[in-house]
Amino acid sequence: MARSKIKRKSEWILALALFSLFFGAGNLILPPQLGMRSGISWWQTGIGFSISAVGIPMLGILAHARLQGDMFDFARKVSPRFSLVFCYLVYAISISLPAPRTASVTHEMGVAPFFDISALGTSLIYFGLVFILVLNRSRIVPLIGKWLTPTILLVLLVLIGSITLFGGGVPGETLLENPFSAGILEGYQTFDAIGAVVVGGVILISLRNEMPDLEVKERFLYISRAGWLAGTGLLVLYAGLILSGAMLGAELDESLSRTEVLQQMSSRALGYNGNIFLSVLIALACFTTAVGIVTGTADFMKSRFGDSNLAYRITAFIGCFLGVLMGQFPVDYIIAIAFPALMFIYPLTIVLILLNIMPGKWTPPTVFRTVVFTTLFFSIPDFMSSIGMPQISEFLQGWWPLQSYQLGWVIPAIGVFFLFRIFRKVSD
Image (cartoon, rainbow, N blue to C red; front, side, top):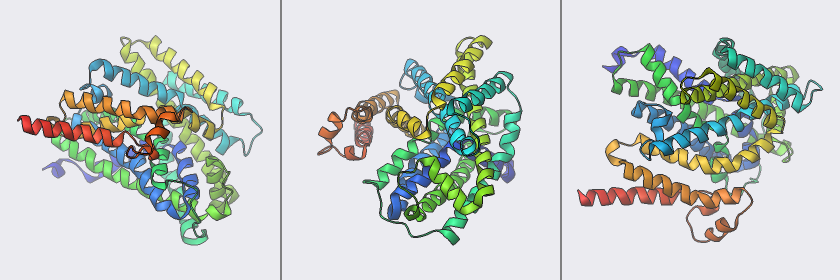
């Protein structure tokens, strides 16, 4: 019955939209260096990266489809106040880290190699234009996005094919102590699990407007199929970039930054002109991402202050000011700064996604609260270690499961969930 109402073409359109949302140009700089450093263990890092950069975000979209709500509903079962704090925290991180990173990627990939402009100058011009478009809610950005993602995807497939089929070498020894967990943690830097929580509700609203006759179950199936199509595309792209990085690892200096590795790969596969073309495309894609993040954050603050346009403008200005402030730093520095925030917010986000995707009878508010606060508590050692205080983490590494992989929160969260399930069955 559902297939009679849902056309395959519309599923592909939604799949492309989802792919575009998660396919941030900033993400492209992560897999090549990861592959270069992983060497013969590229498939282990690839699996880890795919779990946190593809699997969890796609499950986030499915969780929204099951919830049929917005971002605020994601943590409502913990408490409305906790949910509001979670929303503020997610948006604060978004405008402080991934948005500025787009300017830094643009400078290193599309400006510095060709023009004598400082990083501060690029950042000022970049976020000045972002501010103008956010205030005017220009249609330029959506129009660019319609052709930009398919074009970048095509160029990257040529790059990957050129290296893996014709021009690559043999992967060397791995430089990573724990390739699988390194892949998971590098996948955090895509921010895509957070992105799924933010944009999932927006997709549902658009779907209700465009297809108001769809029932809840049909809407879930529609989003599910589109989500897996998008996830498959991301998986192929990331795996190809990781393998390409591994195959060129012996020819590249291990001290190269993430953007430098991608540039070297691009020059090798596409030549000088092709590298320029890809750099311009990445710069444009970064710009549209920054506009989207600042606009989304400003919209949220506007809704929290009685639909105030002043709140929208102030938030847009603060977001762009933070962009200039942080965007002038190198990409790898911003990634290092982001790591502590991600070690705190990502475990929480992953747990909320997994809890929301389960049947409601399995996850009453008591289970939500206990699992969430258990996750937060056992994330403290990894967070402390990420800010230069590794004493607790080092103490636990000898006997606490997965602590040496900076995933010490996983077993406690799972254990608490199943304990509550067992207790619930016994009590019933």
